[in-house]
Image (cartoon, rainbow, N blue to C red; front, top):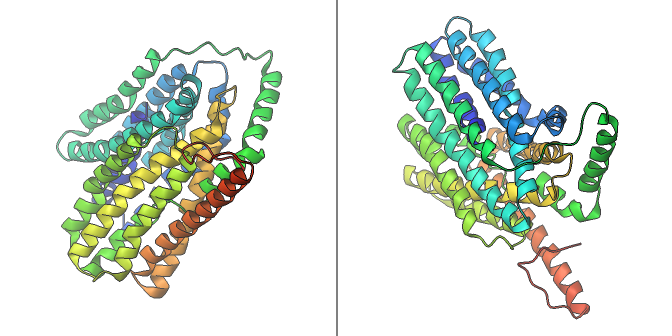
Length: 399
């Protein structure tokens, strides 16, 4: 299910910048266009309620993936002669495509128990990262060797075809209709309040909004490479395809963590592992080997963070209910906020103190959250000990 989203995102982050450069766009303008087409990632919760109405979510996935595939193909056809129009088409297509992730998250909540959700979240995130890295590289490769119309058709097929697997999932027809839409909205409102404004959800929401596991330094590693005497080929390999593969492997590695383990603790633990690579880069000599080793470990641990992040989202989401897609989008959007502010903080640190400030600030954010979670565990364990109840850390810890 995550393949339509991952492949579309892979085109935006890998193929599109290179192709825009070929048609004469300067790097700074490419950065602005990239920010524009990726903006829906932080805003799509505003239109995500659409997929909680009228149709099965599996049906929505097929429709939305197909529609975004058509927009992607159209953008590819327009890119060379009308790049500005193509960019707006990609923006619209990505805004549509993002809704497939809402449906996928809701289907996990609908079809899996708590243990299954944790495992499914890791597999879903791993699949998305694999599609992003390999799909983006494939589309860039094809765009350089095939005619534009053929590339457009292949890109559309790669986005639309995987969505058909959703039709194999058993899902009941939604009961909401136009006649009872007001009652459905009231029910959805109660479910949103129960998810976002309940004491039991507070730890998960706080950790989603915290600086742990943001992987914000990834966007600045290329700028640091020159100070580590790493050339263009090294950046393309490690920060490009190999980095995507490493994050994918990290996400799949999270699958081996027992599903009954509290995903909030696992998320903080993965952030702690990520901090190790940051600390290494702070104190290691600024050589190519140090860069390769530190960034590679960072990418791998970030993949695990991504998987556990989605596990925390599924944990906070709980049962799908009528608003599963909307609540999923809201929780993921909350989790995207730290990526924004940590990228800004680390960028300012790079400008003020140089390359070592980036891994230092990234590691500090991860370490602070890991310490906070450790203190939280200690408080809960002490409280349970006073009540005479043996603490089991692999169970979900309540307030």
